[in-house]
Amino acid sequence: MLAVAFPGLGQIYNRSYWKIPLVYAGFGGLIYSANFNSGNYDKYMRAYQDFTDIIPETKSYQQVIRAEPSTYDPVLYPETYDPSSASYYKDGLLRMVDYYKRYRDLSYIGIAGWYLLSVLDANVDASLFNYDISNNLDLAIYPSVLPLPGGFTGAGLNVGMTITF
Image (cartoon, rainbow, N blue to C red; front, side):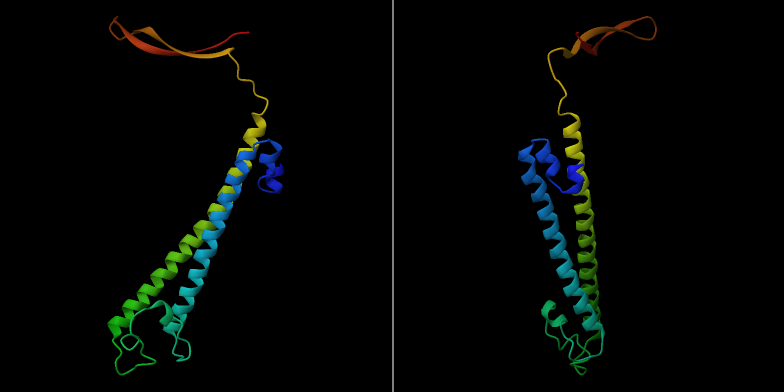
């Protein structure tokens, strides 16, 4: 239950100290990914909105489109505007918006999954903390004779588990 309250406390309680850096490295990587994708999503969404409006003062799209704006901008350069070029860049901006939105959402799902995985790890580790693995439990693979259809016998492998008290 400590792992539910705060990630890593379950691993401390179970004395699995080596797992704590892994828990926080996973959270750190996923949070970095979410922030990176969210920032780029906001940047490309603003650029797409500025590209599609008719206000000349909003031109944040020129920071992400590295081409000469005289070929694709009908507001600033109506005389040299090429509709096919504008459509190409508009579709490209929309693709980037969708790309960063998808990976931002997947990063958030990853954070939730990593949280559940760390809680599950602490729970399983706590459940198996006092489990005794000794020589009293044996798993053996040995040859056996298998009956086949038609009254024939054949060789095979058999797996057996024995517990001695």
